[in-house]
Amino acid sequence: MWLQAIREVLQDLWQFVVTGLLRGKTSVAPLQLPGQTAMGTNTSIPAERFTFPGPKVSLSSDEAFSQTVYVAVPHLPCLARPALNFDLQLGLCTYAQTVQLLRTAGEYAEVRTGALQGWVLQQGLTDRRSAVFPECTDGVLYTAVHPETEKLRLCLKDDMLGGVLGLSLQPSEYVRYRLWQRRVQVPWAKQRPRVAGEWQRLLKGARGVRIGIEPRTGAVLEHVREEGSDAFLGYVETVHPDLSISLSSVGRVNDGEYRYEQLAHAEWKEWRPVFISFA
Image (cartoon, rainbow, N blue to C red; front, top):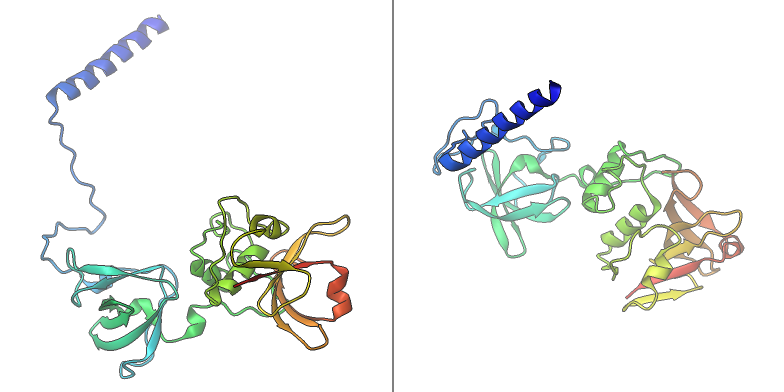
């Protein structure tokens, strides 16, 4: 009996599908968000209707024009006029991008960056560097929800998925951020993952990459996993005349912990690290 019931249900479903295909004129009402109203192409959308991810930031002064300010949201539309109308977008400003502030008009600011000039919502700008770029403190654990971790991952567009996975700040993320700050273009191949212990293997032979055993300021220190020790990465801030180094790193001892250390020549030499530098 139950088999007969299933057959009847399937027959009814098939008839419904066939009927819909034959008619070919089934209309679906457009999805409308709560509070949304139909708009024509010339209708201006109020600026307050738009909310930006991340902290609400703004310019501290409306008078300081021609100053350099920072984009403080992941994507900030640059418009032909100070209005959110259909097809006025000239381009996109991205997180941590520096732009020149030219003037303001209500909720909008006219900015210029490279060849792009137009209007953006002021709410997406800030003149406070600390509101955009992470500032790490020695001994602090940077969890996935720590504000400085979130800033760093926004700078890198979270392309290692640490934020998506809810991980604490990873060693390779921190080192890549320090290279990003210097605008170093690392010639990565398609192999993944780019974790501690794999950098020298992935970058060996790449153009513009030097791998050696002597430290250089701005180089990446990599210690490969050995018996009794874990692989780790660090960034060489300074090489001193006595060959001691200033090293910043995340996760060398504790997961997500930032450290800024002064290491004597004999100390770092015990690790038998390699130093990866970029042209």
